[in-house]
Image 1 (cartoon, rainbow, N blue to C red):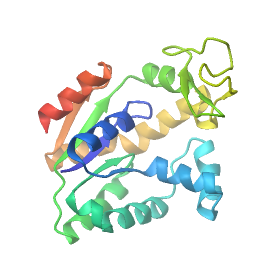
Image 2: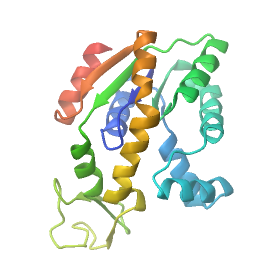
Image 3: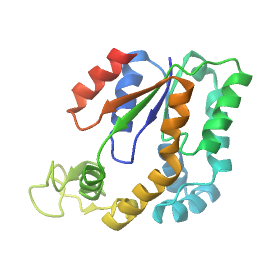
Length: 212
């Protein structure tokens, strides 16, 4: 099974990808997670990426393409993969297509998770993370009992720069301009399926399983 998950930031791609990973026992490749790991390590790539991600812009194509190509080359990806957060542009989609064709690999489905702009802003700008244990809270859906403190360990809660409302709205503008054309691209390829991302998580998952 080889899948791509499309959708705006905050649409639940990562959650669904993890559930699909468990279901089909195939690797979940998240470019965002890989890049954040580099940022945490404070590597050269991480420092460069942090500056770009903090501003809400997309990371350079060459950087992302190199990461994906390396992942697909690994042995575990030969049985399949789930791409989350890639491709984000037509250039990336064309490059991925060429890379897969070169390896005689077929892409099975592209799942497009649809969520409104206001719901995206609500989901992301409401997120707060514990500096100590990493637990995540949301002002709208899972508020902490004592403001600014983790319910589990009393650690201080913080918000990433790319989760602030003004940056989230900029991220949505970038998504619409550069990523949404991918929907037309994969419609022409004949493997795109739309899924309503406003449904409860388990219902979204069941709908994805049905189309697969």
